Image 1 (cartoon, rainbow over the protein chains, first blue to last red):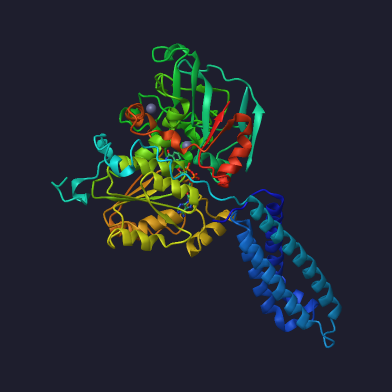
Image 2: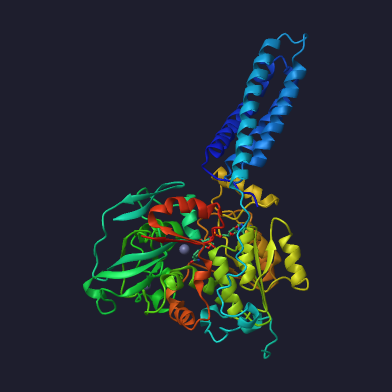
Length: 175
Length: 390
Ligand SMILES: NC(=O)c1ccc[n+]([C@@H]2O[C@H](COP(=O)([O-])OP(=O)(O)OC[C@H]3O[C@@H](n4cnc5c(N)ncnc54)[C@H](O)[C@@H]3O)[C@@H](O)[C@H]2O)c1
Ligand SMILES: [Zn+2]
Ligand SMILES: [Zn+2]
């Protein structure tokens, strides 16, 4: 199973990035057209909106209190996609090249944070891993379980907890 | 005195607080010698259960020595008595108590109006468990005030250690009731989700009550090995399909009895529904994750029984209720009527039929409690059950 420590510094950073994802995602969703125009990518508003939805989904995953690592890898993959899309728009024919460069710089900085956070999360897990202890001798019973089966059959089952005969699976009369 | 105090999500502190005093004639004050952290406490620690306030003292699994007794409790208790205190506070006189339904006692919840509003009708008072169940100070402390103490106690005879009897206050009767309310027949397969402390007690109870086959489901290796030690066939839900394995082990028909010993914080597997739950819980659109309930409803044999000791707090989503209705399943659930079972179970411990101390993996001073909450929740260091010594 996955070991992760909630409330460690890496974990808090991951949750922070989760909120960032949601914020950015919502911005991309509501201002897709304006963002596209600002970067000279007018025909790509739909794509930006889709990326926004992706950001929101990863953000929710990160905030959902489970193991943050798969979602962090999701963010890194998303960063790569962003960079590829922006790089394609960074050509001489785009009058808004400067703005695309700014966006690229920002994404690169966030990517560095994502990579750092993911590495920290993995390092924590490696440090925490120890072989599981062996509890195979902790039965709590004086004899092997097979010998204890039914030892408390005499225990009274209160009337309110008894299964009506008709719902019993055991053939009526057998026992 | 010192106590473990709730301050917010994942924030429990070892604080100095005022000593409790007798407030009502039926009260007693108990000096705690041992207490434990329960899976239910984790729902408060993670703050998925509503109704906690800053400053609340935690803990509902504890025992100790009576050091003060109110005038009306003197008939049943005296200073020096050694007692385990059940987590459900009961009056012994109301309609419900007279039927043995102690966890829905009509008089012990002093925040009845608030609980009536939320649940339609209030349930019993519980120690250290939100203001919806009375807001009583808990037992992860040096001293506790026990209301209705003339009823709310189990007297412990000499010759038994704290470790052997402590769990009579909660998880042992809880596991027992979970199995008992399945009314296990010798031909039954009982499937138990969750191999935490409650699951472990349920496994032993189902074996003792004579189930043909007990199957336990979890993903934590050491918990599965402890389940196996108790006589269960195990399924690791991260490695195998629970539904396929259960059908395989029951000739394709499904288990007759299914027990949810996990509750509202079921873990995400790779299945769609649990990811859906996590997302909704994170966005506060749903309070409980019902993955285990759904799986039980699906795999249970028609006309079978679902027994639910696992705690739920509020709303669940996407419950395939039609499945349950058409299959004619019986649902049994509730907080445990602890004192209904304690005489019998104490006798079984005395006779050596079972020793519940097998589940303890950590025993430390109360001051180390805050760290232990984290260890227990994150299942680090092989932790299954923590006992704290004030
Ligand atoms: N009804 C009562 O009176 C009562 C009393 C005590 C405890 N409880 C409840 O019982 C539940 C269990 O308590 P505990 O002390 O054993 O807690 P725990 O948290 O230690 O155990 C829960 C176990 O369930 C496992 N689990 C999680 N998701 C699962 C899944 N999808 N399938 C199978 N297993 C899964 C976890 O790995 C863990 O081992 C909690 O909800 C607790 O509040 C109820
Ligand atoms: Zn409990
Ligand atoms: Zn009552």
